[in-house]
Length: 238
Image (cartoon, rainbow, N blue to C red):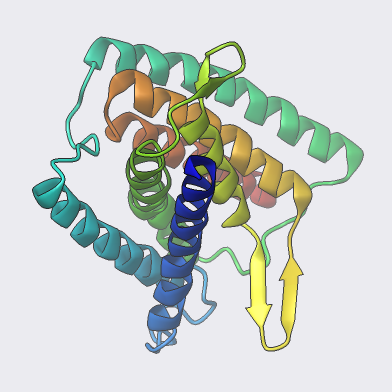
């Protein structure tokens, strides 16, 4: 009976976590961005991430009041957080250099699907720096892991990773799939989904060890800005 309750709780949370960003996308689609973003590179997604963050902040404020839940709105263990940031930044920097080198040498590198105007570059980089990481870590780490951990207490991989972290990371991966209901279709790129899950586990581990959402936010923004920034530079060089 308890197992069934836990499964239903995770299913409910997963549905909620995936539904709110979709609703945010509908809300963002109500506005016309043609005057500031004619190529639809940053405005719609910025409004979407802002809206979904506000929705979850409201829920987290309410839950913090009625259930006294902590979602990591502090800098937590600063020593551990700074160490995590440094090690992660170095490793991801090397990973990015290796991957882009492989893409270029094998001819797999694909240029951006929109013109690299000053407005588009700045808009995309500002979004990646200020909205993408903070919004998604607020949802899929601070909120998701805290709520999942209310029911799922175990740990896996010889106790190194919490089950709540794994589940939240998988949901994060699912969020990178495109689902349409009229007609019903599901499209995704498996490397991207697996990449999101892997990074999600790392962000989640940092969240748990530091008891702060801020370090995963910084890490997430860093990865996005580096990947997009290097891509932009290569587009001008190649």
